[in-house]
Length: 307
Ligand SMILES: [Zn+2]
Image (cartoon, rainbow, N blue to C red; front, side, top):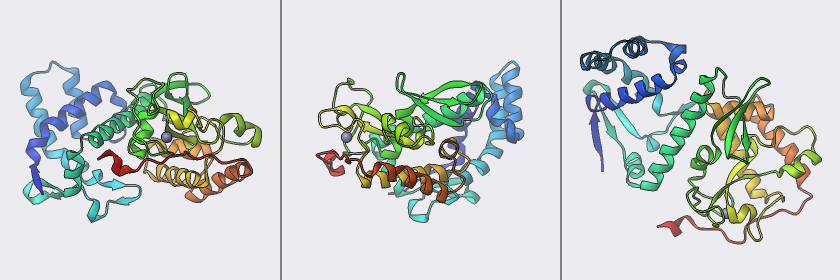
């Protein structure tokens, strides 16, 4: 099944979103000003009439698609492979063709919701940080409010729900038992989404005094309440090797995200400049936990169970 959308049908929504983000936080566009962002600036500072909006829309129509469509399917240092493309951009006809991959995402309400939350959470991390004039550096988790904080010597700023930021990478499932988790159920439910410190804080500082921030994103996963602190839960045990390997993989994935806040967060908290550095540092830490009894959940939920 394929479908297509013409550029003109997207202009209004795109512009509205852009103006909303811009009025919330003008800093975000300052680094690469173009005609469109300058015009948005003028628009926001003067009396706004429907006529002004139409003029703005005309500029948007001419400007936006080059940047957006080209950049959208870049992940890490390259582009998505053809089989994973979300759309095909047919510039000469000013339309995009939606692929089956995108259609399958759009048809699944829960995936759609997870993606939307992630987008918003990630934008918010960056925007909140810019608003107070800092780059989103080490994202440090605070268990009392469930928020990520950006920490520098001068600032400690609450940014965004850690669960929203991390959960999409786990497709909304527990890192350990693969159960669907939710932040909307009561906190004593088995499937309540908790943030788990992979290497338990209580042991981390005793085992290796040079470890990076234990509350850093490098050490955090979303887990269900049962796995984290339920009966037979993980508590302050290290997890089984397969989970360690999954964590390393995920941290490298975050690191590879071009110019993204999560890249900074991983790189700064592990003192890593390359993929190899991350691996070396993770291995060093993991080795010290190896003598301890490793934990794993009793039951693994199968993905098909949801359907
Ligand atoms: Zn679990």
